[in-house]
Image (cartoon, rainbow, N blue to C red):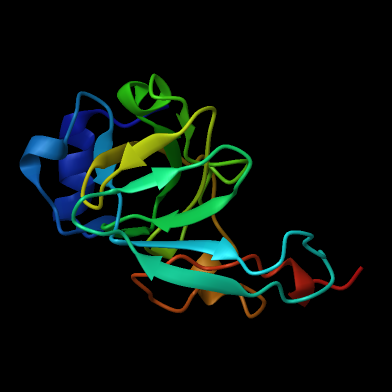
Length: 178
């Protein structure tokens, strides 16, 4: 079941969902709009290796915007820090962003109960497009969890994305054993 606007507000009041900064005008019928933070990153190397730590080059989006180019994976970040303690957050792109040919995630649209951080975005585009820090980029949808939770994300010893940040975070796949 997807939470409605009133259920999202109730969850915020009860501390089950945290959104900082919270802007009432960003609350939709059953979602909350999030915005692109001021930082982007690209990987240093063209060929990435899943078993190695692939380093990123971090940069700030200038006031006049930044042109995304096809064929390049950009890591972005939401302005909003979120916490979710009783529901599963899903991040989807806004339709207006999709109509510009921008995808905001490759595969990581679902968060875990207990995720407490900003969201790193895996941004790609179909044609060159200028973007701006602070622009609406996506929407969070919350699904209720049925049953008890044994391992909240923020309490798992092997959770890789728990350090609070306002910058995009590169893949930590290399920390897995395979």
